[in-house]
Length: 505
Image (cartoon, rainbow, N blue to C red; front, side):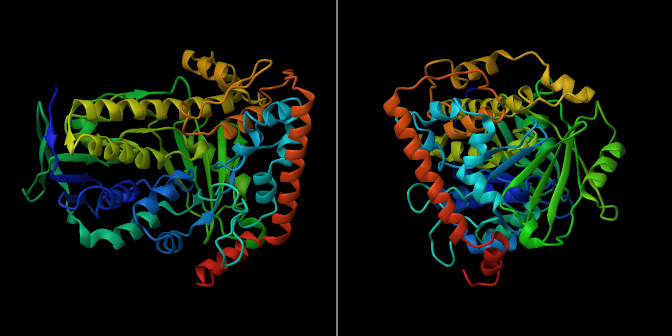
């Protein structure tokens, strides 16, 4: 229905990480006269998904005016330079976070052609972010603001690891006095053709707002249950639907608290290794069609050597809503969509959706109408599709085929929309095309790192002019020398974090 809503109040329905991230951003970005209501229940647990992030999260928190020292210390945060993929091929590969290496692969230098002519292992061994990460170096130097880019480009250390439970709680404690907070259970949602009319608490109290933001997790109580927006499964593309998580304690934190995520293949999926400040997060993402929950837990325990800590089992509802903005409801986080966490995009579905919403209503004079909804829905769908494509290609190019699961996931027909991505990013002589304006979730350097690391360029020869080749070699050698200098001068990741947590940095 083509309805318009003048916004004087916004209700964030559901707390947790998504709800409080949303509320904080709204407080910072929308006019002060708009009332922000948060409805949550302390009796209802949260999923707490996401211990790793994309760089957007730290930037989002800065824009939400949440001090870094507050959320970082309270959430056991550590730095993340990228993801190391282990077992996907006969050697590891690495995808870094931000814009550091895209500059090394810029079209004007033709460095991408230089590297696509060389073995994937040689490229990975050179990659600055990978070398710094494997050396367990902090991406920042001492108490200065100097980061590992040496001031030449945007910081690449903005991605983080953290405890998702703790960051939501720390943000709540920081902003709760600036919102209208209801700690209640909602028993009923009243609605009509124009959208949600009001919420009814278990004590029959009425909570009204002009716009409702659905942060109720996989349940999607407003968008899916109330407005009947269907969930579209992506099981045909990415079959993983379950996870089991078991924390472990540090034995040697200087060695084990590494500034990167590890994604290691398992019999029916893969496992994450994510060092936070207080412990190591371990989890196994798998498909229940190929392994039982008990078998998955046992396989994880054998891999990490932990047989006493309690395991936490999760069901994942992977897919999306074609309309995340419908009538006067906006779904963010898990209620809008979710893709398995291989590239740590869970929290991105919150931060990006809220940004889309704020940008759209700001351009439309604070009115939520069909134009605003259409803009949000289009942007969300493009973002979701890109994430699915990027993750799907990890599986497609994997050389592991020793179990039924891996035989199946690597031999699935290529979806039409993924074919388009391949045409865009898998080079054919003599050129490699970069379009960051279209593919914005992952920059060109990340696409190159993932595809070259996955051996997508085997047999592809990109001939370059001798002058370009010579320039690329100089460029590569220069970055290698800078990396040597960083590894030599920058502190151990754990030691630097100790300084952060003890107020030295």
